[in-house]
Image (cartoon, rainbow, N blue to C red):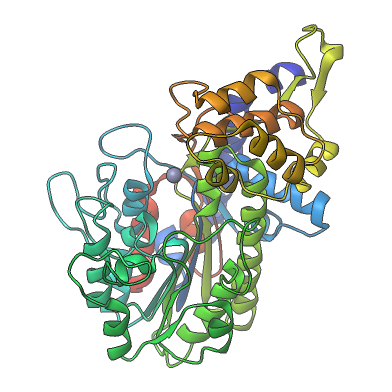
Length: 480
Ligand SMILES: [Zn+2]
């Protein structure tokens, strides 16, 4: 049966995940029966809530993080090995109100508000109602609030957890709303929409300097890793890049902190003078961006960077046990399908087949660039010589087959659902030699995974909808 199960990997994965979730429901029912209590009465209230969010990551990605971390860095992956194993585990259906495949705005809105919205909308339902976000509710309860991301701070996920917009693309308007909301910690990329066009990196059309406006409200502003490390303010604005922050493989550590360093700084700032506790969202967006590019090596490093930040959150929880740590994502990105494949097209015989294993992981581990960085260097009219040089320099042991090379040089797409030409073709090069295939450059409807540990964690157990996540979050924030 193993052979046939493997032949149907996406279905098998979903089935396996459903089995895990079902086991969770059985456990939940068993615990209700043993106490004679309704689950509603049994819920403990956390003082602090840390939401660790890996955009675009579901069960295939989490498991990839687990085994690659074990093999290539000899380290446990605490997301799976601690939180999923010892905490409460659940699945979330993710569909928006207008489709079955969700974007980060609609998924984040459902998880923040408890309401379905259309794709691209930020916490505004399809009948035009602004519904309260998790961070607004937390603020109204006197809690301190923080948003940390490797994307721009006005990107879909942090925006959906705090603000409102008909379109996630209203970057300038979203930044204006942050200034009004005053999150105690706001950290990531996206300085461009804080600064006026005409100044270095600035894109604002109204001439305003929003960094100066935050400073005037008493914020400490930090712009690089050193300044973040030295930061002592209780209110922090950290803007490390004009746009998105870099992939781990491309990151300059002097300019851009790790997700773990941002998490540590955010927890330091938020835990000061917080009698009512705090709610903190920490997002790694590179897990999603790597999926869009079909970039398995960048995904792996992003998952490790995320997991290092989870370690920081769990260490904080160890010292402050009235803290709930939730790990989740919003949807799957890339139709990520580690599988077996033929070594070449000479014969379809199973003897010509390889199963992705440790040696293939080691090949991924030797890649020294993101596919997005290669794409930037090649531009829209790639040169064969530059392409061959980049492959030789950054992809030891890999060969670029003539068909893929020609498609890159002609800028042709693999299929209609692959819209990142160069990256997706290089992703296919990596897949042919490692078995790390991808089905799309977009999102898929595989259920999101949620793991929670600490007071209130049991609410997230079982198979639920992403709006249930939002409802539970509001209940825990409001202390009901
Ligand atoms: Zn995405």
